[in-house]
Image (cartoon, rainbow, N blue to C red):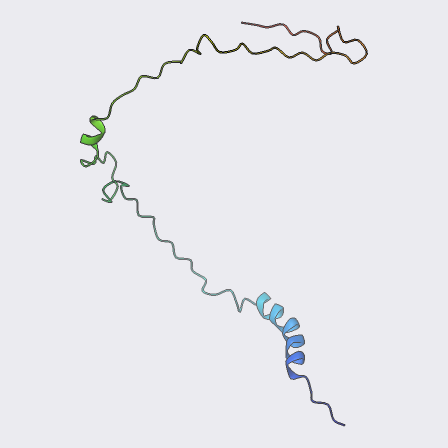
Length: 106
């Protein structure tokens, strides 16, 4: 009996050797020039072209009417429990600390 020739397999094996050779010759590199287009900077609020010193008129009036809340530290309530200090102790001597006390600098 005569078996058909696996042409697809033979073509794939040939491509494994031919394509890297063609790639090293620069066939798949494409054009030699690279084109760059500058980014277009526009204002995020009014979508106008951005220029140094750009001032939008749409949001400034609304932003001027917003309340300003002063940021001051909040005191904890008097009924809050105090934090419990944790200290490591040695296993064989529970009364002795495991680490020496550090000096605290103000």
